[in-house]
Image (cartoon, rainbow over all chains, first blue to last red; front, side, top):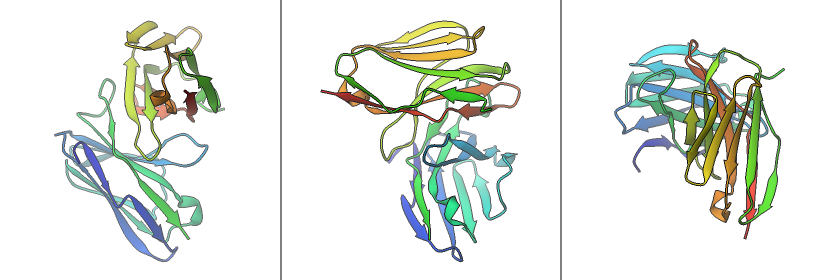
Length: 114
Length: 111
């Protein structure tokens, strides 16, 4: 797969589990994003990294912990999640952060918290 | 009140119809306007973006922005079954550098 890849594509976890979502972009971009997409709700921006530095944390609960070791990789570490955290988690990248930079999305990880 | 309101769906039209998808917004700081298409089990893909009032055309798609009314539209001419997807409007505040999305409108084009 080219562009933006995400693994796993589907994840079922209990509320006491710890898991991680992975995103990788093959586009040479400098900015990476995590979004949450729930049914009947708009895309919610969670985190933004630009040149590996976190530039945006949209009041996300601490049970979600992002990590950006380099401009090509982005992780979302999950622990002690709640059932309402079940959603599609989308990763995106763009050449830079800000207006005029097109965001390219991955296919998402469908997360179910039981 | 949400910053971006998108016409709710779902929308079902026959093949060949003209489709109009609409969003309104309240934040005057929004300067960039985008339309994304999202197929089932896929991430959104950017269809069109514009930063000025007026029309922008790309094939069968036309994006229209009216900043004075805080209203944007996406028109699809000669709609095809392959256009069946969820369409998301998004707007960017250039100062904040982040996009705000509408809820999405699901379109089905029936052959």
